[in-house]
Image (cartoon, rainbow, N blue to C red):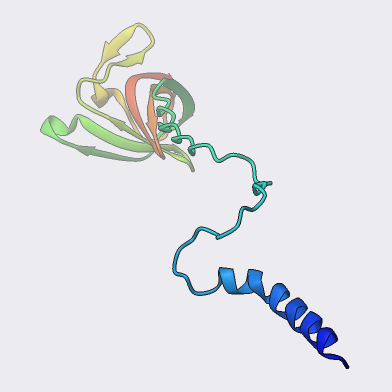
Amino acid sequence: MTRSAKHIALYLILASAMPLASCGGSGSDTLAYPTAPTVDLRPPSTPSPIPPVVTPPPVDRSLVTITGRVQYLRRSGANDLDVTFRTDDFTIVSATSTTPVHSGSLIGQTDFLREGQTVITEGRRDGEFLYATKITIIGF
């Protein structure tokens, strides 16, 4: 190989190494030569929306009417006028001494209630309990 061919080969090797030398180890993030702008293919980021405050649905405290037979009658309170009893497998009725009890044309207190009577109980349900607001005796 001639001297000029060696020089040309050396120049080509050095010229191809120049861009590598300019990128390495300078410690700065800027390049010594201009580059084309980069294209970001990701969609633009938007701030995440604040989730709405979820309030639980209100408990339905509307009046419920249940018909059943008085079972397991228990009395408590002053003059034994506070009562609890079952009307079915899923309901325990609780009535205070001020709960009106209707029997025909009579209106009285819970002392009208006896074991085995068929009653219509109106009140507010809370789980398996029914807090009576009115009791009507319809059968003995």
